[in-house]
Image (cartoon, rainbow, N blue to C red; front, side, top):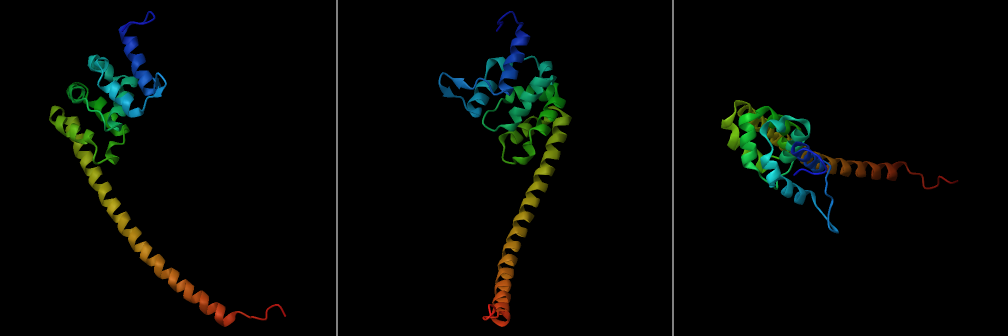
Length: 178
């Protein structure tokens, strides 16, 4: 883990920063997808071995934001450990990950599973449920309004066509060039 005279802590920080920067981009000649990078990072022994208090620092907190932004990889032991020890870091990451916009994300169920470990996480889950329900209601209202607007637009189009035809037939002068 120690490379080029760096301490293990510095090496872990560099790994996290490279993950945030989207590195490595290639594996040989094959491009690495974001999903593959997430899988490799979140299932690595390096991530599991990071001391809990390090997750409160900026690069690690931003990596947690990325964790809650993706749905492919789960690391329930890490989330459980952080929910017990650093619930504020988990709340920070969830709020910035836009998890509330993905109501079918497995990360929501994961959070609900650790909600009993910290009151902050339980409160966050309640707030997320409220926002998810409110968003769902607004999407339904938006779709209803779109449907109503489509029917109105079709009717208005027919009315405008009939008015235009009437205008052309009554006021158009066929001999306008004379």
